[in-house]
Length: 424
Ligand code: PMP
Image 1 (cartoon, rainbow, N blue to C red):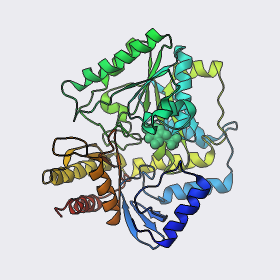
Image 2 (image 1 turned 120 degrees about the vertical axis):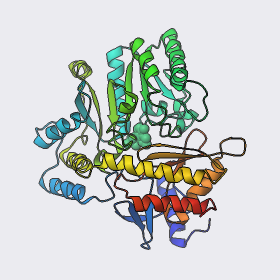
Image 3 (image 1 turned 60 degrees about the vertical axis):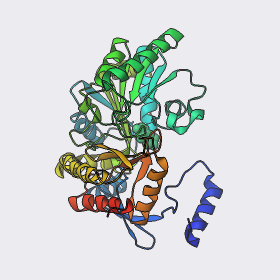
Image 4 (image 1 turned 30 degrees about the horizontal axis):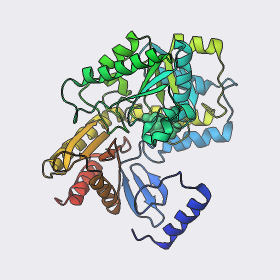
């Protein structure tokens, strides 16, 4: 792609000082300087519809979040070794969004740390080390959690004999009863871990399978696997970093769609609308056992400023009825996309839950077509719409706009996609 001199210069300088490990999105990378609701703006003032950012979940620069953070920053910012009413009050409000059995919260700065802590808790409770994840999972970047993130490449999981993978429960590609099929794969890996002497500690799973290609249906296909986990004395960790906080529409938490009761739930990304707050929720007995034998301190995790952001996010989700909006706008989006899909050969499947939607591109024989997904992502960017592609084959558009999106923007997105596919 031909890049303007400013973009070229920033890419070169960035490469020089930050190295090659950080990727950029789009053939023509964007320099964004401002955001407002579902829109972001570049240096020239060009507006982009953000259909991808699940962090700014209540909308970019939501005034209630901005105000809460600025106010708290001007008062005090300490850590969890002092009493702070707002931190406790937020934990109480967050706990109230979970089933009764999940009683205790702990705070971190990132989803990676939350999963890392969850692994420590699960291993401590079971006395075993083994972890099962899906084949294209992403759970974060600490040493142990990177080993549980095969989507980062084989080097991630090498030297981690305690990780076992199972294929993703992909209803588009698997025939027969998906729940039974998935549970059998999980059982095989449980047995393998037990036989190896490593032992089985936990199934770590993202109930929307964000990096495996967005796999929402048919619920409750995770139930048989959950039964197998608990029958083996293992724990279920639900990674809600992507599906959590109302994104899936029907409820606050993704695991609820499958009728599950996880032992530990991890969360992050949208929790502070961009402020670095993440954490986990667990059953009380696990918290007691962990706290009896081990300590935890996280300098920035759950400090009053990030908690102020998190409280504002929770309040906005409630006051602006964003879970309901996610359902309604998600249904409108999927209906629009299915209309487009009925007119083009290249879309094999449209699937979603709330405002988490996948569009799978395939070739004439149903084979994955990542090249077309990539073309669409870049062509949409040229039209001022931001999305990306995901999945084991990289052929699925991942669509996750801020939850405040309205019908007009949903329709605009569908129209632009139709245009890119030549039917607009
Ligand atoms: N779990 C899932 C499902 C994620 O998508 C991510 C981030 N993409 C993480 C964990 C890690 O979160 P963080 O980047 O905040 O460490």
